[in-house]
Image (cartoon, rainbow, N blue to C red; front, side, top):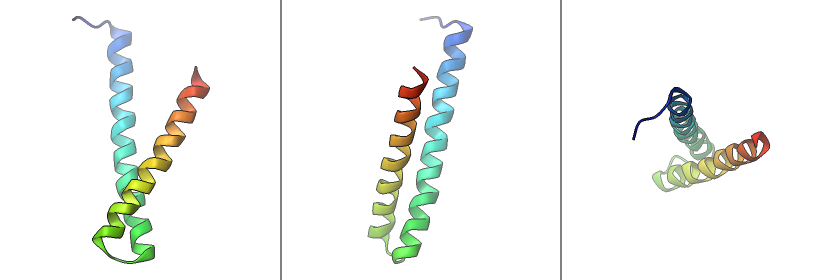
Length: 66
């Protein structure tokens, strides 16, 4: 399957957004967990909550762009 330039740029943009979301989720999760208690379980929950929040923001942004 050959992709044209616009499709390649769109895929690159999506990959960048997903990567940025993952990094932001890790950092925000770490901050949330450190504020609560330095425990691995809470760190994992912080990542989950941060991913949920950031995913919701990106989904709302994507719907707004359409």
